[in-house]
Image 1 (cartoon, rainbow, N blue to C red):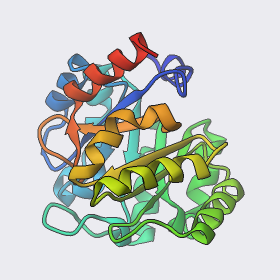
Image 2: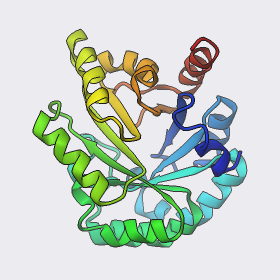
Image 3: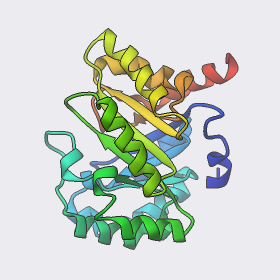
Image 4: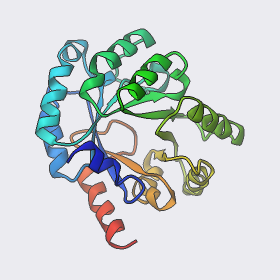
Length: 244
């Protein structure tokens, strides 16, 4: 399925992103993701050993041929990486170089809002090459305040993002209501709201009802706390589409 076809479905139904990383060969998981019903493949370059990243361009070509799905390239900043093993730290110069080298091989890039100023050249390059830009915000400790939400919206508009992605912890049933409110407060932007952790699993399925346009899942192992398998998310997405 080509990128234009998938993008046209944004906000019309829940779209599923298969988040891949941490393995030497991603072609097999990408192909499985397509069989499981994914709409996008996300490649988490910051989870790949430097020896693997050297040949990432070739591997991206193989992934696209294997899955026939549009690809999101994410090179997460150390400031917003999940704590624990399996992540590699890269400074902004290294991340910018990787984005530049691989830009022509992907359809979407994901850049943190806090990195938007230092990687503004990369965002401009993506726009020039007609790529889409996800501007993201991850907070593993708490929800953003009202003032912070307003700032996120201003910066998203300033740097001309296409999708605003916000991921926050969901530690209780009450946090599900906060996720709904956050999603509503980010309107009318095209947005993704994710609740990380066990209590966030419900919103990963139901977030589309409240304006969240993408949901992220895994094929072989979770890339973030609370992620569900792509096959499960795709099944729920089809049910939502059939029973609006």
